[in-house]
Image (cartoon, rainbow, N blue to C red):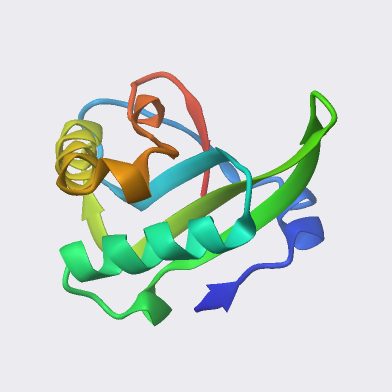
Length: 120
């Protein structure tokens, strides 16, 4: 798996993209508010199996935060080798989530809406 340095990302002015319905984007996703970091990696492993790709094809970064006096993690990932429209990605990640809701319960499907800024 490849990890990206978060400091270099937040300083990169070309990092955010405004989404549009009719454009293709590298596959991306958000995993939010996970109590243990290893759950993020379980989700990425499951996604790689569902998409029939090597886990090394997934680029990611994560952060640790304190919410309501509890530590939790969030992760953003991209899969540069696969692209699709917002609608296609939402359908695919919805299907993946439904295949194993226990593992993928933290996978955020709401990120595939138009006119949102996404991290790439």
